[in-house]
Amino acid sequence: MNEQVSFGYETVDASEKEGRVGAVFSGVARKYDIMNDAMSGGMHRLWKDQFVRRVKPRAGEVILDMAGGTGDIAFRMVKSGADIVVADINQDMLDVGVERAMQRGIGAGSGEGGGESEGSLTWSCQNAEELSYPDKQFDAYTIAFGIRNVTHIDTALAEAHRVLKYGGRFFCLEFSTMTWPGMKEAYDLYSHKLVPQIGKAVAGDEDSYRYLIESIRRFPPMPEFEQMIANAGFARTKVEPILGGLVAIHSGWKI
Figure 1 (cartoon, rainbow, N blue to C red):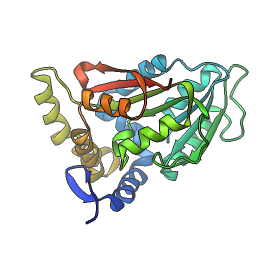
Figure 2: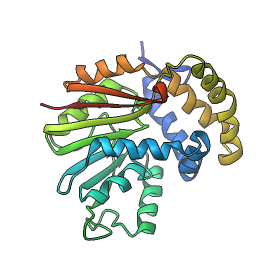
Figure 3: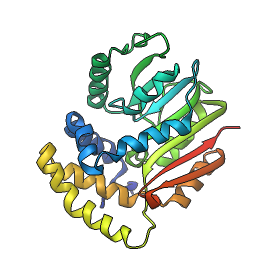
Figure 4: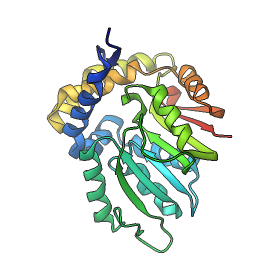
């Protein structure tokens, strides 16, 4: 019997999910950042700033930013002088990121930064479950709003652990389960009823944004996901809820 996994609220064959998720992100790639602003009231920018402060990228480090497509996290980290490899399974998302990098004057795949104090950006089409990199390659691994779209999350976490050097750090920013009484119900109503309509109005794509909300609901709660990170081999795991768990920063170390 074929393995069954979630695609939003649907249950599909595991072999189908990657293609269906790919179609979602190919469809929204050009409007992705506009939609993030519309859905979060611009707060996603603050969450990403806080995330990068926790990562603490440093000059000379090599960091893998998985599911980094449009470059939002990479652009913040490259200012530190670190060399960032932006990886994504979706080439359409990467194309948007490369275009944005060129507009900012940051070298896209050339190994040239946009200034003397900046590191480099390199872009690579990668599957989080089957990275092409050798063991112990990176100082840090980051993934923001991408882990919930992976077919086998445990496999992706194991790959993250494999490609990190000893002493390397893992950081994940992801939507989670809001625990504040009253706010949870209000957020559920907003996300299920209004977000798909915002997607329809802004991006002309109601179904993709319905999937994105449903995928948040199917994602493991914070304690369960933290345990998955530990099971992948990471030590000193930590979870930092933001806005009562609307989003959370998860971290761990390879030691």
